Image 1 (cartoon, helix red, strand yellow):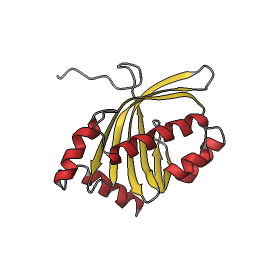
Image 2 (tube, helix red, strand yellow):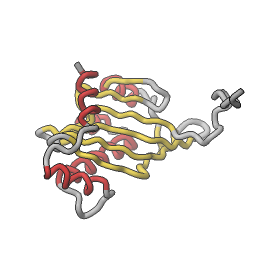
Image 3 (cartoon, one colour):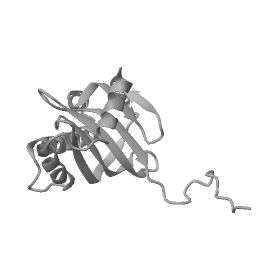
Length: 175
């Protein structure tokens, strides 16, 4: 059921806006922090801010409120965790982030405006020894609930410099 819901949200994002009011919201959603942000876009932006603060501060209670029950968290290494698994990993100190910051963010409202697809880039520093800087791209799908926005899917992908992985196959000249 959850995979079907996520697939439906992804497919809905490919459709043109359903109403004229939706078309008016989309350009504003693309302007980061602009005065033209509608209430829905501003709500998603605030939920994103709260999520980042809770992640840095390891505030599991705040994250529990911001994450939907059918949450999927796809890490930059490809591992998938449910809401419970993600929060337990955070509580066990498996996520040790010294710094986390969003570089770019685009918010796109879909359907009736009750779903938002948020994409962008981020930088973080893990508290490994030595500290490991990471830059990546992300996509998160948020849905509006009576008590606020809840994230249902997070996918992070590390951005690596070209040639950073010596194990990647090199292109062969055509014979």
